Length: 435
Image (cartoon, helix red, strand yellow):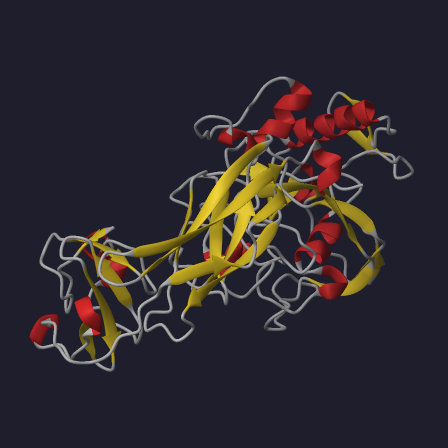
């Protein structure tokens, strides 16, 4: 509910209202809406007066008792004498569903009668582990919308649980009709269950997929063989379950912290974790670690960090790439957490739009360690490159990819590279695993 009184609102200042149309925000508290222009079919319900309003043509109109709808006067003074068709019933395409963590499903409401004047639905969840993540079709990600006839929901929980999604449409006056969807959260157990296969292919490493500009030079054709990559950045919960401690700087209430990406881990910490997870799974560890010397055994079947080439290829969408500027789309706010929408902190993995391969957070949230030492690209085509073999020049540092929650939008491109000293622990650097 928001306070009425914004320019053109028919409600009295301070009245409690519920928006039925495109927005569910406090205008006075959000500078984005300063001097806003209402759009056709924006509507809301004023719980104080019992009236509903719709913006039709160029004016606000009241949906009053008896079906009266008339042209509004100055500043939205309600008018009279036009017919309104009220909603009398609502249904949803799914009544109950088992939803695995990280998966999404589209819910669509059907209103009765089908020609109701206000074709809008308010969607609410009683559990923060099941959230409405976008309208369908997708709207601008600048606003976290939860009002529309169709929405996409996602499960974020890590333990067995249930939630109820409620769809509400407002009929005559204060009358509301609702429909519920029961959601059973299916937990994803351990890291192996979250891997997706990345089919091998060839790509111009360093070239922006959308613009074709050579952003990291020299650009050369790189071929990678197929591999499995974790759908999500490694979480605090996954780290804790293996290592027995949680190094993360950020937290959330209850068990929700388990879904935050782990950070404050060095490159050395990441390879040690990969080896320990491999041993627990009965795989051959990928790394031989002797002090600060780490050797990769390419014949091992254990978990490991991706190479820089594997990471960029996967972030671009692999063989399914649609040429987006960022990992999964051309709007950085839809696909990632960055300075513009993160509120200067990490967020649970998988809340933004995935890329073509179903990989989440390849743009933003936390930087991701990769195997490679830092160094200039060679000017020759390569197959499965792994970076400089010796720490000459810049090569003592290890590469990080993807950008983070404090990054500017251009940093979130799949081609962007940065680096860190391998023993450093930052609250904006984590990783994901491959096999």
